[in-house]
Length: 421
Ligand code: HEM
Image 1 (cartoon, rainbow, N blue to C red):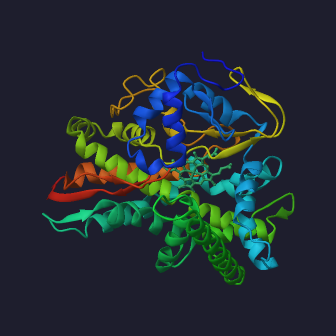
Image 2: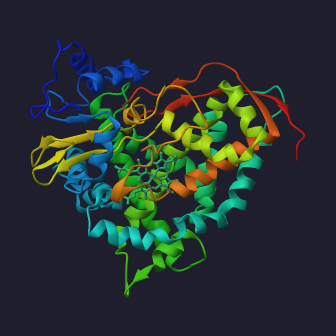
Image 3: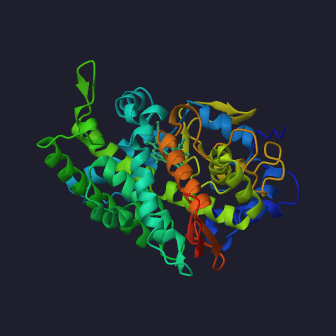
């Protein structure tokens, strides 16, 4: 195991310089895995020149995600501060602050209190009640295509599936997805390489303000018209007589829309592309549908959309022998950890029979609440794709130029419909 208290790597420093360039300008690294392998081999817990600890191996990523001294809340505060303007009025500051009130961005005990109130509908057994809905959404979308038609899988299938599903679950008009598609994009992808830092910042500010107004209005209406949707559940959820405060409710609604949006859409696009590009694996699960869940897990490992986000040490702590001082910032690169060859031999190979737990849904207290829903959507899509259609790639996929591993386009062709059901 590599241990270096100062975070200074051995060698001639070329790998480190290259990694620094990646941190500055990820757009120039559309395939980051070779670089991740190089930096991991030299120093898997690399201290960047700006002081950020960058973790790229499995063992330390897992340890950091589980380390409760590394606070997501403190990490979020620094991001929120960078979005605030001095002359913001109360309403604007509140809207921007909702980001740090996402329970993803809170530490315990508040994190645990809110997570418990929201979690009932997301446990694996409860999620099964949404299976007919997901099945319906997937079939309707796949029925839209003509045999021989070329289309972009990302915009026509990968985004619409989770959007329609979460809209129906929350009881939100489906037409609204165009609005929050734009907002969540501006928030999640704050560091778009093609825009200047100021443009990115303004777009994220604008998105928070619009999202906040939208969520408050929706909650106001729903309070007068409670149904059996997820938003009504959140409004009514109580534990020991205490429910969510209004600002917590707003933040939770926005979080649920954002957290499962880009991540699930990317996973649906990636699993489909990987299966089309690996016909032997596709044939295996056509013969044995019990392998379908493994294909979704393998796709989310191979092309992990979410990093673990920024954390800040609340006190002196350590991550596999490396001393992290109070106040230090730590970034886990889950995308890199899921390609650590010590845990996943031949990591760039798509293997639906692979064993071993990936970290794509995180680990520890912030483990993804929506993982059972994301898995359900992935499995239903793969079953439909493997049994009802034959797809071909109609070109190469493209990636968005930023730190997250997000796909931009996946050109696809419907080559044939299968007559199996
Ligand atoms: C393949 C799809 C998805 C991936 C890869 C993913 C990934 C993640 C990761 C890595 C975290 C932990 C972040 C950290 O520890 O810093 C997380 C947390 C979370 N995810 Fe997901 N997610 C996905 C889908 C969803 C969906 C569909 C929803 C809900 C509709 C959702 C809701 C959440 C929430 C609420 C949290 C915060 C949990 C907490 O702080 O306790 N996610 N997700």
